[in-house]
Structure formats: C-alpha cells, structure tokens
Length: 324
Image 1 (cartoon, rainbow, N blue to C red):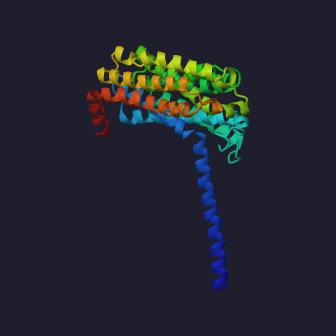
Image 2: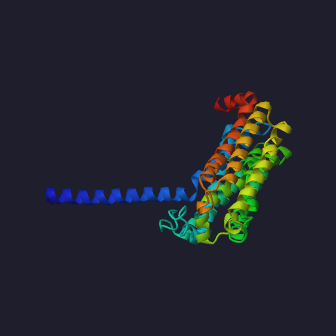
Image 3: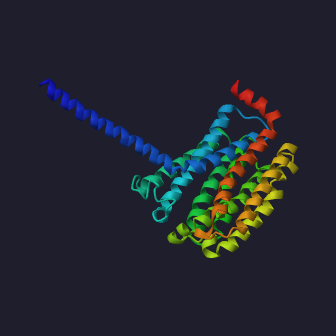
C-alpha cells in the first residue's frame, strides 16, 4: 500500500471521526436543552435557599445530592412538558427552535428521558435524604406534568395561577431535605413563589400574546384582553408586597430581609403600575411588560438572596463546616 493511499485513508477516517464527535456533542447539547436550563436555574436556586434557611444541620454531600435531585427533577418535568407540547412549540416563535420541533430529538426519546430522570431523582432523594422531601419532589413533578401541562394549560386562562404551584415547591423540598417535615415557615416560602408566578408569566404573555393566539393557548391576555390582564397583575403585586414580609414575621429572617423585601416589592408594584398605564398594545403589551418580566426574575432571585444574606451569621459557620 502506498503512502498516498495511507494518507487518504487516514484523512477519511479522521473526517468521519470528527463528524461523529460533533454529532455526539450536538446530541448532548440537545438533551441539555430539553431540561430547560434557564428555568431550572431559578428552581435550583430557590431550592438551595430553602435548604439553607431550614433549621438544623445537613452533611455537605447530602446537601449537594438534594440540590442535584431538585435540578434533575425540574429538568425531567421540562422534558416531558416539551414532549407533550411539541405541537404548539412548533408554531410559537419563542419555542420553535426547541429540540423536538426541529427534529433533533424524537418525541419518544424525550419522554423516556424525562420519565427516567424524574423517577431516578425522586428515588435518590428518598434513599439519600428522606421520603418527605422525595414525596414533595414527586408531587411537584406530577403537578407540573398532569395538572398544568396536560389538564390546565390548554383549557383555562387560570392555567398559570393553579399550575404555578409546581414551581413553588422547591424551597419546601430543600427545607424538608434538612428537617424531614413541612412547616408553616416552608409554606410561607411556597406562597411567595405561588403569588409571584401569575404576574411573572402574564407579563411574558402580554408581549407574546400573538404566539399564544397562534398556538391556541388560552393565556389571560388572549382570553380576557390586555386591560384585564394588567389589572390582575397589579392586584397580585399588591398582595405580594405584604406576603413578602411573612418570612420576617415568622422569624425565618431578620430586619435586613424585611427592608430588602419591602424595597423589592415596591419596585415590583411600580412596574405593575407602569404596565397598567402603558398604552403600547403591540402583541398585547409593550416595553413596560418586557421590563416587568425581566425584573420579576431578578425580584425572586434577590428575595431569596436577601433571606440567605440575612441568615449570614448562622450561615457562615455552616458553610465553613461544609468546606472543612
């Protein structure tokens, strides 16, 4: 065999190998996209906050396992949601590039992926931590999949009000991972996210109303109109302002958090007022709705950050123990 033929053969093999490697990399990225990593990040953060705020001690390895289980379970629910919503995802501009509508992942593969991860994360939580946390984790996933995605999302404009409970479970799960129970304090953390969810998603629905109309999803701006949606957003943010102070009232946090929660809540209310007076009705909302949606994510992140910072005197020794 000549040197030339060896060179050609090596080049073809190398090209095929590089193509296979690129394809494998794309597949990994596609499966990661199924997990909705941006949504998962806030879920994981609130779950971690619940774990930090809970009274008692937990081994750092077990704490890491608890956070991992919350992350994997949230991603698994997202994968099943993409499997079920693949028809409407294909027609919505915001979701048409997802792995299933683009044909990068087959629907049955996404479903199997989601089920395996969901069951695995719940079992690991139960075996490694406790079964109270595991039951809460399973409840959150089942609620998101069956109550929100399958039952409510395409049937009622109250879909996100009721279905939003699924996203409110993570701090309760983190709390239960440490304590093994459900307390009034952890329910207060649940309530905070539960009441935050409607104005957060309705802000998105206002400036994406055309997408939801095209897909036939009865989000509140589509069914009731922009004005009614803005009023609901304003009412929810008014209720959220005192509700944000409940963790301080229950003694979970101190005065530092109370000041931060009041300031953040007033800003959130200010955005809702801006949306109410915004006359730009393109896609059901204008710049104000987009800004409110962006701030709503920052609001929840800063609220839980303030809780943990307020607990810093007790938190630092715990972190030092974990690191040590």
